Image (cartoon, rainbow over all chains, first blue to last red):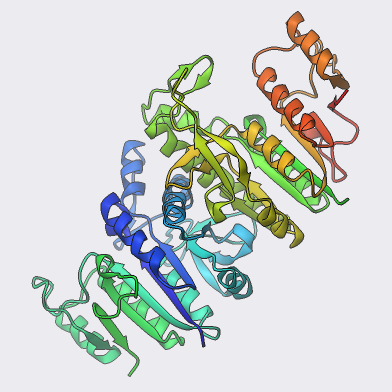
Length: 263
Length: 263
């Protein structure tokens, strides 16, 4: 089975031009096939502030009202996606940037307004990923750059969590590739002690995760990230890691980060 | 030779949701293969105003400084492109939105700063259009939605005139298709008397165009549009028209507008 690299990057890399340039250089050097999923970074928040667009948060999550949706489409599908694509092209990596609406490649459903109305947020449909099309692109050595904007097929674009999107794409391609899914963030891995950057947990299984969570070692933003990561592992993705984007080399993330274990 | 429809729409259609919806419904019903090239509309200007970003004009043309470039990428490649793609998908038209960086499909060169520095403006390179790739998409019945953002292959995105882009794409595909290139704008065609909406010039050749221009009947924004349109005709595009977007029917723009003549 051919090996596929799916890497998800977030704000920490996207917001820093030097870090992004280094990351993209290394990502471009990775063997085909590969997919890059990107989040939003702080650009959307900064732009919202400049536009005096209040950002409503519910239970720590941003509510995507209509104006915020327009803004995320501009920033994610426009500025960030095309900036990454053009930088990869300059590294001789033939990249193609896609939203879920492009080629109808990822269909989602607006999340129910009950119990909490998060607005124009889309959850990827069970059969919503056109894997045939993804594979056809990958077979042409095209590197896909996916932004977290999907659509419902009825003419509405929806904001989708980028971590979840990466997990869903990896799971959907699990039958076709031996897949490595890597979540990049600002630390060198999941830490046993959040105050000690050296306390990296090199291998983590689900029950250890639950224990660390109950002890309060793992908290806040790491919880949904790890939930997505373990979900990917449970749905057949072979290798799932949490790494620092700066640890990527041309051969991958082999020696660093936290490897999740399905046992 | 197979027939190809290339339609260019601008602000007049893009800025009006009802007009856009009607246009896209009719465009979706057009026979394959087809390409939609869109401009920017007023969204970019409105956003620049909200952000207090001064827009510098030189000789009637906007200067694309770095902040304006970022803004046009957001609006053109993000908001407008993906909105159109999702609406076409809802009309069962399998659309794929592309910037020139995607798949390295359209390469341009930053325009020289002399005699006038227009900033981050890109002119499509002579051999800058990957026609093989365009044809491969069209052969799969994928409708391409092209935004006027191109790239230089060195990691820089560039703002490109959408009228020119449509003409260049049509010319590049001239060897492969019998092509109809239609420029949509807010009037029913080129007018002999700008104050009389009924004075449509149904057929116009280059020398008549020059005469009308010298008489002052044709002026302002129509001049670069017609220059692009005649350039397309001169480079082998078979059918070039200037029409009102609202006159599009499922069979095309057959009975309306101004047809340019190559004689």
